[in-house]
Image (cartoon, rainbow over all chains, first blue to last red; front, top):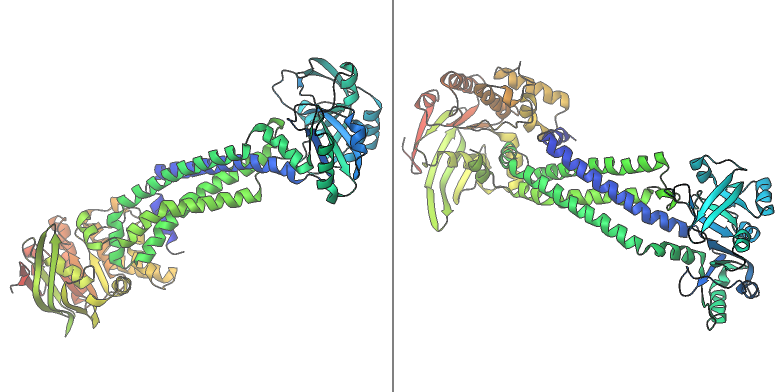
Length: 380
Length: 223
């Protein structure tokens, strides 16, 4: 502790260099926290998946539909308690600049299967009663300032035309990872307007017992193997992950960019530490002459590197946490529940500590091994 | 009684393929409480001898003993600790740390002791008082004159009450007046505080202030 003033005095020596290096580390850790939070948020959606729910999609890809006739056959599979179905609508509101998820669902079976989607009983009743009714997440209602009873026109992208819905209910998710910015309406409205020329995008199954999942999946996929639309049945977790992978290998991409940023800033920090150490060769020799041991000088340099990187990390990670929590950022609707997790903060600080070690080790060893006589000859 | 004993010391350097011999079997003593000036032409080995006595360098052979401690056989770690306790070293170019105030520079050796902050503060003020800089505690080196910087460096050298004070050309960069002040201060430290002082100098006037003058020429003592 007695040596800390010396560390701080050294950091003040080139204020601009110190501030720029700290800001570099802050920016790198901020980007790391942001990119990793994308991955953890996407994964959180799969983590909260129910073990007793399964998804059935077209084996070719989720964008290809499944026949409506599958419903009855799925209901007949032993272990299946209930079946629901849905379609991705993909509409736009207003100028289309703000994206939100739009689904057509079978309302009764859907709400029964998803108790996490909480709707006041009277609003639920109103939503079920009216074919052009919509159920909207609280976040989306607040974002657009919509009111219950209001008509909203959605411009269809997959199903062209203007689609007018009346908001009859507002849902609040009971878990954070479920998006509170979705727009849900009745599958029947879609089916009727398209004159029954559509079929479900996917089915969701409620099992009588989660332990039956593997057997049920096998039975269903075997049943439709040689049909025109073979199925791929999976747990809800795997099903949700298949949505995530629609974006490509997001996890790999985000982690790669994050690591590249950290590596770049490692070079910057190491360079700053090397320059600092080179400039102070004479001073290290003086400190050794006074009686500072090699170990103390090693610690002084490592402490300096640690203060530099950890302060940057506090700014970067703390800034990311405060910014995303404070603004309720959700990736324009793609990342509900977006937040910098405690795990990300811990890894971020570990990276900062790693930066300190890697950038400080060479100058620290040099300071410790410095020959006093040679260094003094250089100074004198 | 000898405080510093240099016995049969040989010191050679390797420069490229050439071996440069600085001392060959040098033996000499420095008495406790003495004030000795080491003089001689450049390359005569004055600074090398000072470095050997301070434990900053090791002899190729022979021994250097200071106050009973065989400096030449200590490990680097033990030497550092020993230096902190027993040696006060002053350089020609002052070598104060520019980012620290006069107070903080003088406090440096005390950071290696178990003294409390209050005790350290008292000692620093005392040392700066002895060298006449008690009104410059918060001044950075760039705010001090050359003479004041050297006096602060002397305060840093004496603050831990060392056994031996070693000075390498302490007046080499000072004007006449400042040099006089520094030499007067050294004289005072020797007579009033009974400090053993060894000073390396080219300046005959500076050497006059010392109690004894030793001349080195090509590593050989020529008294």
